[in-house]
Length: 297
Image: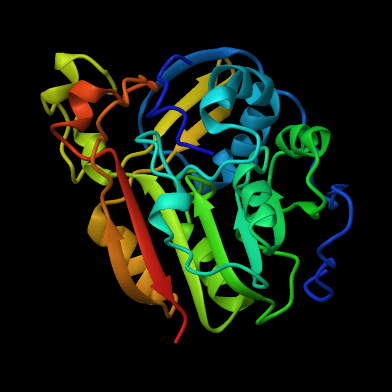
């Protein structure tokens, strides 16, 4: 799932489920919580990790339908898009040859990428923290398992997959992304590939505005305070976390990975879609996405 606020500032460890079965959401315990009130305040501020726990899942549960109504046509039902710039895996091949490989998608949303991979012959499993997103994935179908799980605690055994990836999933929405990398490392076999796309960190120094205003930096790139939305009672509704490019690489390498490539997709000819703060005007001047391609030694 692409970063939302920076893109739209409006508002069982063992026993891998066997691929090839019909799409079915596997719900896990500990996935319920009270619904918060409407947003009353938003801005860049420090927030306790405990206060933000569960906010991402609740936000995506509440906004899944709206998100898919707005972006579903661009994403497609069975297409693999890495970023708002429109880079497709069919062209980039960042995952390499997937036929016959066991592939895990983390933060899958409605599992568009996983569905495309299944069509390429991969034995794929899709996970997301949001039950609403996975319910949308199940309605579309695809014949592969859908598992509701926190990316920081995956319900799969060690060395279970050949490839793990996330397209804007999980990493921007948790304060401890090093745990996401650590879990990807754990469930990958030796030599396995880990690929993740995130909002390019330089974007956090600029207003989230697709017009010329979005070309003038107004915040320090090194200000790591997250973007936070709260309700009238001060409850965190949404949090998105900024890391510098060096932070992302340090967390990935700290988990044990070897970084192979850093991809910064350029804005392509013929692509005129505006996605929140992403636009042709901005995309032709500053990068909007960073994709880290790594492997487990």
